[in-house]
Length: 61
Image (cartoon, rainbow, N blue to C red; front, top):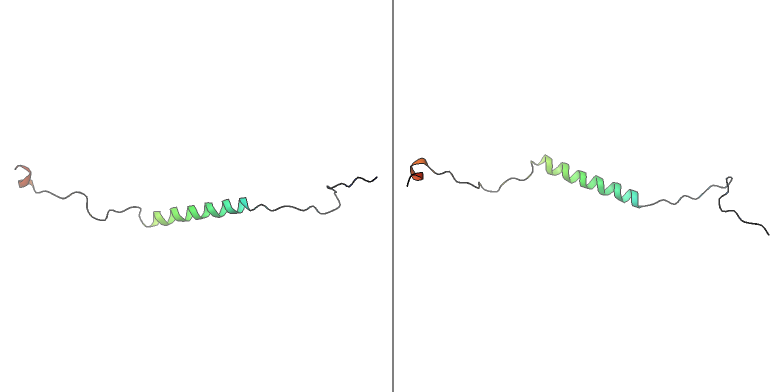
C-alpha cells in the first residue's frame, strides 16, 4: 500500500492567497488619505465667531 505524500518537493505547491492582508492595506491607505485630506483643508473651522467683542464703555454698565 502506497502512502500519498501531500508535500512533495518536486511538485509545485499551491499557495493560498489571503484577502485579509490586502483588505487591511487598502483600509489603511483610505484612512491615511482621509487624514491627509482633512489636514490639507485646515481642520475644523468655526462657521461664525463664537465671542462677540464688547466695547469698553458697555463693560462698566
